[in-house]
Amino acid sequence: MRKLSIRLYGGKHNGGSKTSAVEKLLILFVCIAAFLIFSSRFHVGTGSLPDKVSEVSEGWYYIQDGQKIPVTLSASITLDSDEDLVLYCDGLTAENAEQVLTTRGAVYRLKISVGSETLYQYDDAAFPRNAQMASKVNCTAQLPSSYDGEAVSFTYENTDGRTFHIKEVYAGTPLNVFFYHCSKDAVTLLTVFVMAILAVITIGISLYLKYMHVQEKRFSDIAWFLLFCVCWFLTDSSLAQILGGSSPVIRYISFYAFMLLAVPMLHFIKNTESMKNCPVIDVIIWLFYGNAILQSILNYFGIFDFVDMLFLTHLLLFGGSGVLMVLLISAYKKDKNRELFSILISFAVVAGGGVISLILYWLLKISHYETFFELGIVVFIVLLIRILVVTMVQNLKFKTETMVYQRLAKEDSMTGLENRRAFDELLEKLEKNLSSYQNLYLIFMDLNQLKIINDTHEHHAGDEVIIATARCIEKAFGSMGTCFRLGGDEFCAVLPNSALSGHQLSARLDEEIRLYNSIGSKYQISLSRGISNIRDNSGNLKTVSDWKQEADLNMYHNKGWTKNTELGRTKR
Image (cartoon, rainbow, N blue to C red; front, side, top):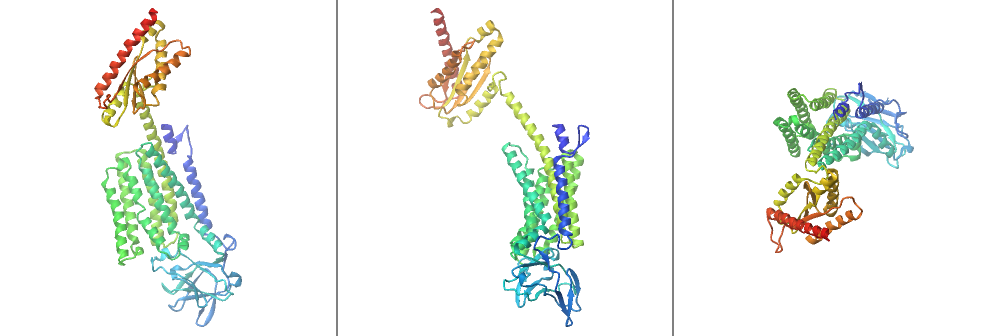
């Protein structure tokens, strides 16, 4: 197990440094994600777009001072006045009928029209967005089936000065445009897919550990965190906003998932052995809950919109991460174990990704800030799962060894039956709940003439007879209750709620002994037995002491009868 732990942690093994399977998968994922980021963010021309989704590059113009000024998209356009910008496009034909036009223009509250008919109007009245959030929204409009090639107008509202930064416009069938947007959100979709798989794995491990009675709640904490991340990443993607239309439901899910995102990981830290007695973590957890409740109240009564309170969640995330890092470092200094150090590194990775994302979001105003956070979370989760798997293997090994030791302590080494210690423990348990049994048989058994066999044929012959007797008892009563070897030539069986009578039970044992003796065994088995039911003939409950004494006396009466019978056979 020591070698296994070192290997899983990526240390040296057999004299050389090797990369674990988890690390290889992690490197592969990062490489794929980097490729998708490059291909989706920095494609050149239309060659990288899906088939039949083309850039509408011709026929764009706007009118200023009565003059028609041509434009090539993308473009930055500065007007001489504070009026809205109206772009016209006469580069479309009747062949474009029923096709979908898509572009980014929500920042300018874009409206797309054909003549006097409005095809699309950006509206976030139900759930306002800030500039960064709006910059990720894809504005899509479908041309009518009756479209005959007339000019299409794109109206951009003047929201901030006189300069407009206009993005490209693409056209294609609804299905191809959908796949185009899927390719633009490839990194997010891949991240969500990986997280969904990891969530299933961690849920499965959590259920398995619960079945094995291993106390390890951190796998379920990771599962909840992954599910929160999946909800947030999906609902925050531009693809989900297209599918959801103007419904605010998706935005509400996105905001609540983000506001409570850190809670499962706080519970993860709380459930780490070195951090269990840390009340500060409970305070941070309740701060996140309080933040969600406060924002809900303020938004419900129209005092503030969620988007105006977003900085509160960011501030709480930033401050909470800082406090957690301090707590983890402090705990590691006191208890320098490898698990705590690995958790500290993992949280440093995700905290770094979060800080970079916040810088991109607030300072640089970059719309795709979440990409770094998404990748950081995946790396963070893989590292945590790796740590927990090592801990789980060690815990399961310890539990298995403990169970084996406990079993050996209550098992007769020669016969495999349970021993006197196990018998005494069973009696203690039964004594607490005797009244629930209508029938509870106790059978004491004693192997006859074992001393003679040992003296005549040496102890290996006696051992053989003892083992054979144990097998006969087990065949007779093993399916009905528990069989014991109490020591030497003494055996016992406890049979709860048996449907058979005492005579039938004795006959069942005799049949197994007869079968063994009839196969020409070298040493014949003769077994005395005494049977007692926990209730007398009137149905009254006996004490455990009386129950044992009765079975013991019945056995010795039977043993005396057996000796007399054997003596009579000898005389005859």
